[in-house]
Amino acid sequence: MASNDLYQVCTAQEGDDASATQLLQCVTQQLAAAQQTSNNAIDGGYSSEITISSRTLVLVISAAMAFFMQAGFAMICAGAVRKKNVRNTMMKNLLDACGAAIAFFAIGYAFAFGGSDHDSSDKTFIGNANFFLKDEDDYAFFLFQYAFSAASATIVAGTLAERCQMAAYLCYSVMLTGWVYPVVAHSIWSPNGFLSAYSIDPLWGVGMIDFAGSGVVHVTGGVTALFATMILGPRRGRFHDAAGCPLETPREFPGHSQALQMLGTFILWFGWYGFNCGTALLHEGENVESIFALAGVNSTLAAGMAGMTALFSNLFVLERTTGEPFFDLKYLMNGTLCGLVSITAGCGIVEPWAGVVIGLVAGLV
Image (cartoon, rainbow, N blue to C red; front, side):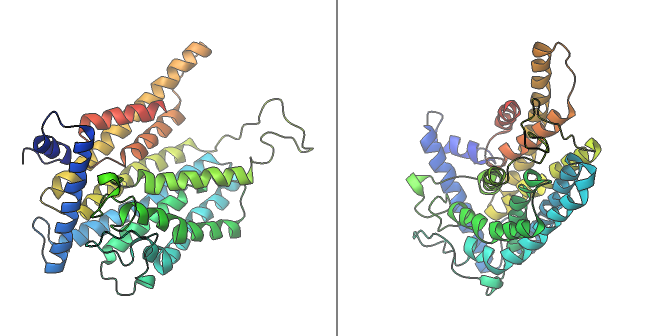
């Protein structure tokens, strides 16, 4: 092969004049071949590039890093709310981890990946086996996917800050990780999902390529957060006074600690390496190490570019509108996280220069 990354492999195979559709089909075939190699290796008790024992070890470590993102979410939420609500917010973040563990173990994993058949072209709505991990031997894969489901649930925690009861929040967390998230994960990541790029007969010959979960994890959490805020409405006193009369100027509720927000941002960035790089281990093949490293490089470049873009874009707007520009830390932190979210879908596929471009667009958004 001319190179170790999927894009260059497909470019060399299809030629420089290949259309975008041909390249996408090639990438899909490469991913499917890698997945089949992984399945054959597991069945035979060995792998051509990475042993089962080392794959399990690194996957568990990656799962632990992805789970550590829960601490990052907790720190950001704690720093972004008023001091009196910190305890309440911390409890919601821990409830996510606890509720997700039980719900994903009992039914979530089964609905997402239970009974997957790599040799069948049949499409299913949800999985139908491995409830309570019965007859499931790949515990590392379960642990890794649990960390993903918990992250999807925790995304919503910040949007519900200071205005949601604990019992209601626990019900939401269990419902999302036990039903909503698994349905989305099954459709895109299971070989029997109707959108899956790993299917023998993928949709339109390509399927949906979501390498590490921009859509599966982050869009699921984001859309859930949107509907939750529409139902709950704004915090009391934000737009109306105690008598219910509209305020001329919305009241600001500044977070009590930007230091905690910054700590949370760095923890999330660190955890994202487990999130994105660890996913490469699910596509074992002859170039797994290269994909593993490429995912880390793209994650770094996209995060850095998005943070800088958001910071200086806001600086330019302030200079034009107020004449008093200043470096706003919130834009730098939010831009960095936006870059990480945006690169997650293609971190193991696109070239580094494309990761920079993705970060640039994410920072502007």
